[in-house]
Image 1 (cartoon, one colour):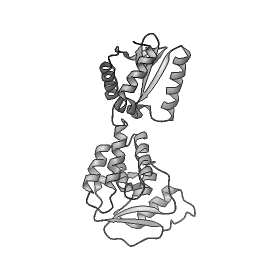
Image 2 (image 1 turned 180 degrees about the vertical axis):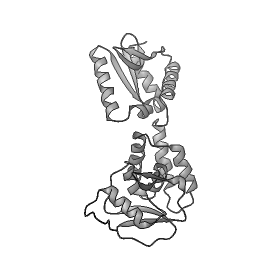
Image 3 (image 1 turned 45 degrees about the vertical axis):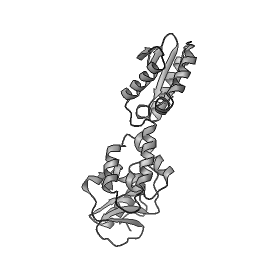
Length: 250
């Protein structure tokens, strides 16, 4: 694989050159597409390309042959034909271990590009291919969903309020303004609960804002409790007991 006029190329240049060398039915895929989508780091040693139909091997290119690559499974990023995030995750499941796959799924969620419906559709369409890794992908997606990744903010708040009601706790004020900042739940005079849902607390900026808010409230004499999706979904009794102890209800 050679790129005319460039002795040293960025990864994007290598990826585009590989796709062009593989022919008009080719698209960047697997590990390389995951790197292009920002789901994992690039491996410059070789480039993964999926090709519809027969194609000769090319130096430096790992060819994955399929009868035909569905148009719905292909997108373009910076002019590089590549498999979609959903197709890329399904393909990745066949070539990397479970831990790496879980990290890629988590990164897709963090970037806001994880579409579980699309992933399921691709997996169903490719379920008969050999070595698909579909069982592993289903397990990873199930673990991710169990942690609450698929819940919207309103759904998480509804679950939290049902938890409060079942435990016989007084209902809090929700989305209340305390010390000039909005909090998820507030029991006057001092107890604040924040619900750390991945879908709306992801990213470094959100992480830093959450901590600044907690510090402000704590410095003002409030007790701040933080619960994750998994806490609310899988450990409701423990959440209720922690709230009860903090407010000293009998």
